Length: 355
Image (tube, rainbow, N blue to C red; front, side, top):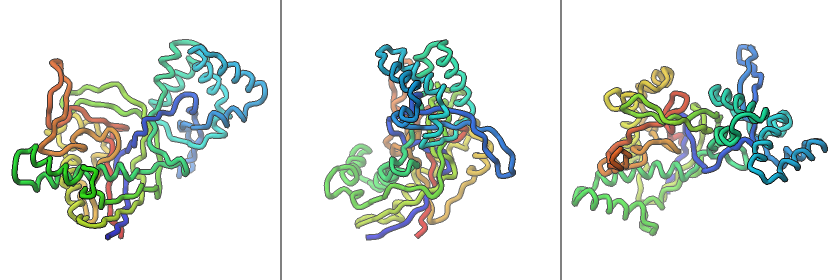
């Protein structure tokens, strides 16, 4: 049995989806004065996440009566009355908040505009409410800090290693070759190779999250879809984890498979021939920092979390990515769109063996 310690560095925002949202009744967004390293004071936008029960317990008697009157109303509009009530009493919400998350200007401005309509009882309340649900990234319920789930990391590594095993298979059709890989990697039996590969949840060394808009762009056409508001782990966050290999696996081979699978995808986003509008959508800072990325022997890349893209989670040579067209669905070997946030791609993680 071998054990390896890893340091993981987020090199583009990561969203580990939970299927849960922050809703306008358990957060407020407000401007907060922040002191910069040079001593200058500026205002920044933050989301303050709180517990509704604790919010109620901190109200005075008159406000508790008002709160109870709203929640006892069974009409659909009562939801938006509660939203407005919380916004008016945002100072209480901020005082008891257990998370404080940076919010990008575009999201904050829309919130301020929308919350004004609710408080003033103007506009379409339902539309405003739906506009301000924010998809959560995974946060530890104990530390209230983001972690990278071991299952997400293992799934990402498994995809790369399946591709490696598929390429080693020389006999039979593509379908037959991949069937052999499935028998080795995916069957819930004692013969499953990856039962010997264990990776713990990665806990933060330094971390941060932010809220912004995830944008779906066409790779070959200059067109974007409707943005989605999400919480993501910020670039530069660092985590640590441990890998344990029991038998039948070689970590060097696993590292090679990860770089064989993910490094070409990483480099393709900078290539105007393969991703014409991907490169044009990335920030100059991201381009200058990572376009010529080179890896040391103890380093490898992964792509994790939601919005990673179909090529990242499928195997080269047998990909069948369903693409919707005017004539129905067709199978292709690459996706036609990519997701970005704050002019960066989603999900890139640099892994480094440190012991």
